[in-house]
Image 1 (cartoon, rainbow, N blue to C red):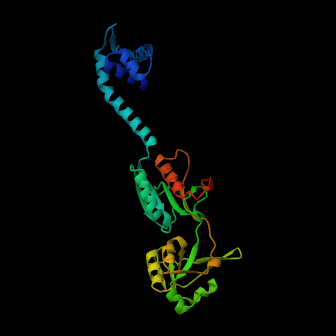
Image 2 (image 1 turned 30 degrees about the vertical axis):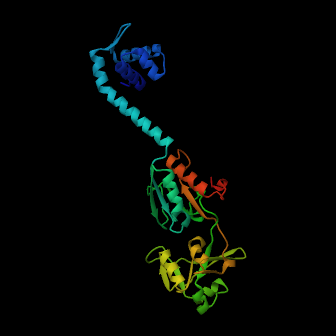
Image 3 (image 1 turned 60 degrees about the vertical axis):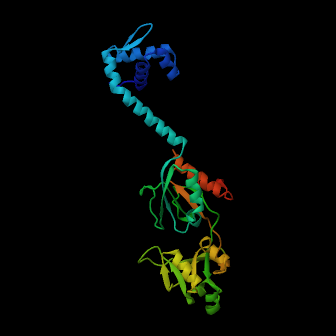
Length: 306
């Protein structure tokens, strides 16, 4: 037998207050509406639940039994609904992100520190990875990667300005080995390369000339999947390295590294926060989107792919 949950809730409040007027005030309805609802409930159950007089409301034996059974359940159900409504009002819960290791702006600390300060009830769980995988299938809420490698069925919001890859070396190395004049000259230099993992080929260094893209298969004498190793070795004069300009920028600013071959290294679309759908977007993810957009004020939010 299907029973109207609203009718049961009205019954519980009337039983608790033993007063139709007080129950009507609590529920924001009229006393006749309370009476009609209870009458329909009794008709449905085919039993009297309340003895009504002009001065009092008393539970029958059946009413006492029903109240004992359903009051706690109604309260628990209302609390559950209130908790869900509170989730919508205030972002909370765990937010799992998969972020590329070269997304310096997201991983620099300042943006993340600002976010967890602004939203103390959101727990960030971040995996730094350069593997390409289905974030939904792996249980992540969103990811941060370069726009060019994000699947077209994802929603993507820009979280950085346009990026550029650069070739860098220390002044000491260039004084000893000379300055390459063209990307193809790199095959004659000692290079410091990057790879995703053991057994994988080193990343091919990408350039462009008169609108035509090409890559150079340098033969690195040192290859690693750790950007810190690459930077420290390059600063120590170990050779020429290649990566995101944003990553090298502090060392370039201090003069520890200088850029090479700039005319062959144009800018391209930067990093995007991506996720599967805007439908029923969780408040915690919406909070992150708003936060990174505010932090990227120079980026037009209209550039988000739809």
